Amino acid sequence: MSKYDRSAGEAKFQEVYGSELGALPAAGTSPFIDYMLETLFGGVWQDPAFSVRERRLLLIGVLAAQGEESPLGIQLRCALNRGELKREQLQPLVTFLTQYVGYPRGSRLLRLVGELTAPK
Image 1 (cartoon, one colour):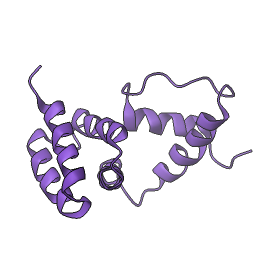
Image 2 (spheres, rainbow, N blue to C red):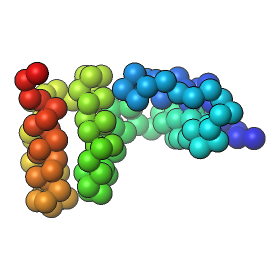
Image 3 (cartoon, one colour):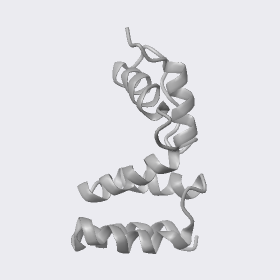
């Protein structure tokens, strides 16, 4: 039994992602999801040391460095939807991160940002 609370984890998950990732499975149907909700969102994301925005920016940097485009797109969309980043901050973010993650990953980040900001 985890020392963390799944319901607190579910609430934090919804705060962080909203409906971006769809509905969560019921408790007990996925041990992986249960564990993630209890420990990551019921514990780590609950720590008051960083705000959701600060954690998201850290996560964006990590994902950019790893070249993880799909989760990076999710984080960028959520940051925009939650008002944690403004559209006009995306290009400076690309420029800054490219200096640390390298130009090949930076160019993929630039493409991803272009897709997110393209008129629909």
